[in-house]
Length: 211
Image 1: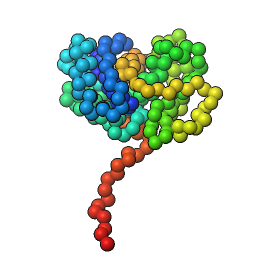
Image 2: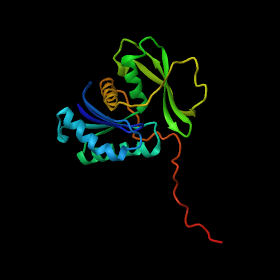
Image 3: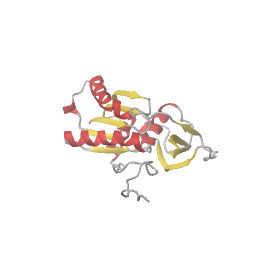
Image 4: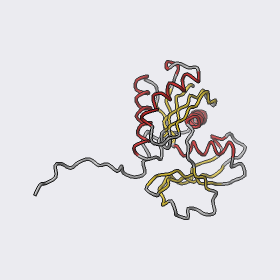
């Protein structure tokens, strides 16, 4: 199945996957330009993968955790694409995609590890993973045992567990997780953003009283 994968929980990442193959991935690492680049990256990923929009069979969205302003750009784009093309919309926790990438390169000998991302306001979002089978393919090596949750950036977070402070989420790895869930008949999370806290801006309760 050919999937368009989108994540804006840190920077902006867009990929096209075909089953367990990442056919193309393009990234913008600036964490302040999600809205400006998302459309161009979708086009660039499809062009690099050599697929037309009519060939996309599903959309995979990274649901965070992430700051409100950036994360909602990717979720809106994924939802709009899904509705416009009348194709399924799938959800993956963004920290899980980081864990997949780590499983490919860094953590073959670990039994557990913690992934963190910047949540701003001197806080981090964190998730703890337990390695189930180091010999399995990366999307099936681990299970998320805790999180995502918020913590203060200077907290001594599970000091006995290896910690990786990530600054990028690979949209391609979202697609690998979606494929693994499909093959194993496991349920993906609902399409609900993991903001972990309320946005800075709140709805007005009406005009202020003038005295």
